[in-house]
Image 1 (cartoon, rainbow, N blue to C red):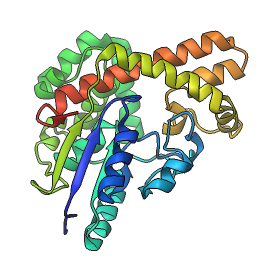
Image 2: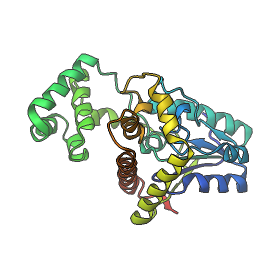
Image 3: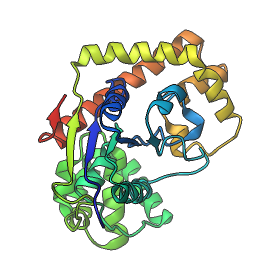
Length: 290
């Protein structure tokens, strides 16, 4: 696969100014801005995910923003295929690209690769979930350490989802998740890309998160969530798990007052930003800091 002449991976937590920096870079270089944020994929969530505005999209070529209906579920694999196809096309045209977002796994897929892990049957995952519920994290983690010590060491305390995933993969395939991951290859060729990370001071970032929530409320976040909730979609779909959907839906349902819901949304946004900061600090230590 031919690679574009210039690919920039621009990562950072929510409310850190990624989109503004990408737009500035695109104006200066003529680059195409490509979305690498799992929440900004969904057409139903422009306000709540702080997608670039229509005016910003008119200033530079933006791709993979708002291209997916909330009823669909895009995996990291599906996004990676779409992004690679797009980079291929841009490379053929000699156009540079800036991939901007806060979804760490998207960047990992590009720079380290995706493991070709066989799907886990629903029944197997349900059984493993039941084991976790019965045994608790400490015992469950100890069992995982016996069959996949590398995964057990890598998974943070309290990360039930990843613990169950690792155990489920072994139960379904008879092979450790870490073994599958060891066979991965980067999707982007070495030397074809550069990585930049926006890493703001934490308290300033949290203040930006709070201001962003206030702005979202002024711009119609409630209307957006109301229209999404009216569709009656499966609560497990990625769009329904976007930061803010649960909190504002609870207010609309009468379960929370407005002030409490907004405060909860601010807290959820700050928590999300903190997780992103930690992830990028640990996983992209060799990228250039902005």
